[in-house]
Length: 472
Image (cartoon, rainbow, N blue to C red; front, side):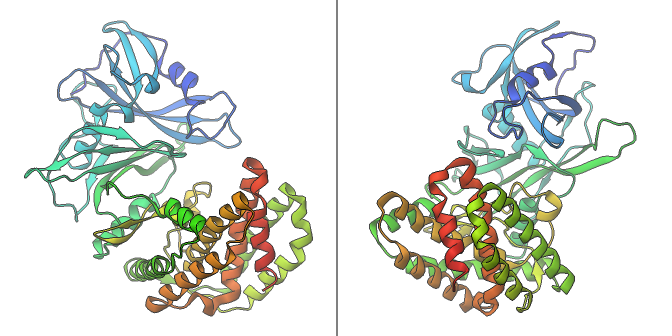
């Protein structure tokens, strides 16, 4: 239970602390700008020991090119948290409690345990304005497929994440079996259900074991804007699933094998089969919709817009515009499959190879820069195929960039094996050759912009792919 000290003062205020701290965080979108924050909502979790204050703030930032709503969980302590200097948001003086040390809550084990308790239905969200009063706007939802009762051990934050914060909890079952959990805390919030939660939950409910077991989620509501009567936004704030220790994603593995010239034929083939299994289950569980001529036009218009943006960023692309347009026109006349829910941002970094379970697919949020409404709707499974083909090409291209040699044979073998494996379980992607090429080029256009802004000397990888895709 959180005790609210009404009428007491704080120096500096919570919003002042956040304003000074948020701009330096990896997940903050308006890089280089001072946050301009307005509080939309706040809620609390209780510390069973009554020592640590736990409060989640939902704030609107208008410093960037578009308004963004952020979720910022904080913990308040009466003394410094050991070995957590890197997570210190700041210090404040409380009129009743005295000095308080304020931390980015995912780094605080008390917050991690309280959040998992909420997800499992062992605790309720609490009001930030009244003592011993629940806040019904925020609820934990335990997954129907999660049957284990677990006890919380230590916790640690995953390093290197760009848009979210994930906490690994070393939990165990009542009989002492290790059952670690990872909780993803969504930093940027939007009105609507998060596809990562929806898609993985649906897959597990359908009996698919190609994704981690789902523990549950946190759902909430908050004002759409600061204007009175502007409505309410609703969405997911956190998502918990089983954690598979000692398993690395496929990207570093593929990169090592490419550098050594070792074939990944068998692994790519089985990955293709696993990918088709997931697509087939998603189509059955969440349905499909026909691809009308209007849908085709929408897709091609979006691809042309991304091409124009890439040409503006890299003028060298202008010489390829006619060839790219020819591919898009061939795609218009090609046979387009039905739309369905897909991964949306599929590449080698999104899959794990587990000795016990085989291939496991992760992170069904879709491309983080696309609006939530786009990421939550039906799409073409060919987008996922194109993403993985580009990922194999990037592994080979990275080797070529570093060594100056050729990895084309390695890339071709991996891509062909992946497509062959997919075709054994699902429809052969090569039956939609022009559409698949259009999606590959579209992904490469995204890569061109990224490399131009971040690693100009890597531009040749996506540029070379566009040249190859427009001459086949």
